[in-house]
Image 1 (cartoon, rainbow, N blue to C red):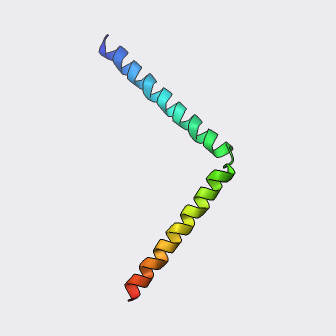
Image 2 (cartoon, rainbow, N blue to C red):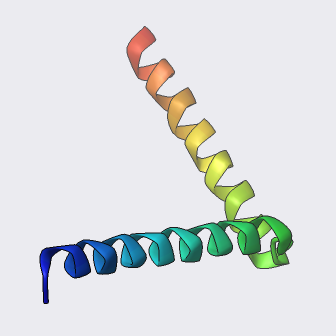
Image 3 (cartoon, rainbow, N blue to C red):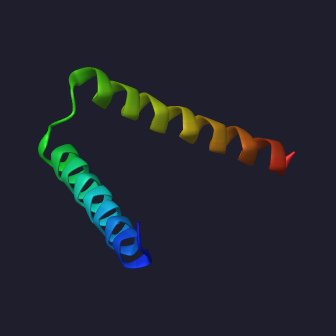
Length: 61
């Protein structure tokens, strides 16, 4: 395969990867979170808040 063909193939591959990435992002934006996913995100945020509060308490001692 010549260099120009190889370059075209690389460009095509990059283009297809980018398109697939964009489609995946678009799909994620459209799909609502399931109840489980929403619960996990809420609990994760709550745990992070508790950790931050605990660290503040340790720092003030």
